[in-house]
Structures are given as structure tokens and as C-alpha cells.
Image (cartoon, rainbow, N blue to C red; front, side):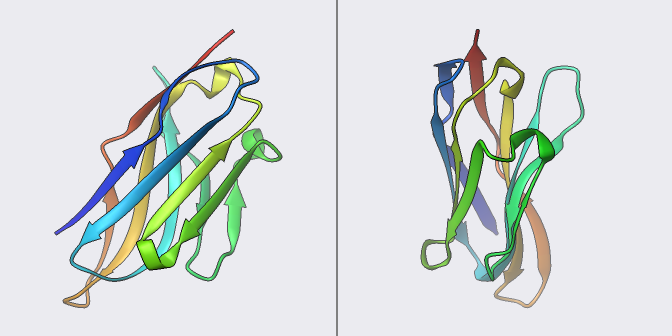
Length: 120
């Protein structure tokens, strides 16, 4: 079994910054892509950003230039630095990891989510 534990959410004023972290642990051989998704009230979950094990980055248009995703492969951890936050960034942010387990299966895992609230 694999666990993803997010941290770093909270309340911030518009224009402020937050840094999210997500650490993966458990029966991990390696991790392909890691990413962040978000779900605002009444909306579908959407991709915010992801990063491959080789460092290829992908961002939603709405966060380009404001958010930066990075990862520490040695720690199985992914980060999301969020700057110039806007009220429309308010959502529950979920960590995702495509894990190759120690029994050679590929499984998509999700964290429980961390709430980010941006006040105007």
C-alpha cells in the first residue's frame, strides 16, 4: 500500500503565497508522474500541474507564471509553490502519483486533499 500525505494548505489573502508539499510512502519501487489537482465547490476536479520523473513540467493555463511544481525524487515528494494567489484559486488541492509498486504494478494514488482558501 502507498500513502500520499499533503501539507501546506491554509488561508491567505489575494496576492499572497503558499507552498504545498506531498510525500509518498509505502510499497514504492519508483514513481512516474506526480501532480496536483484541485476541486472548487460545485466544479469538477482539474489538473493544476504535473511533473514526470525526468522533470518534464505541465501546467494549467490558469496558473502558468504563478505556480511552480517541483519534486525531490529521493524523498518521493512533490511541491507546489503558489504565488500571486487569486480568490479563484480557492479549492481543495489533491496530490496524485503514478506509482510503480514493489510488486511491479502501476497504480494511481491520491492524497486526501488540503484546503486552500484565498480571500479577496
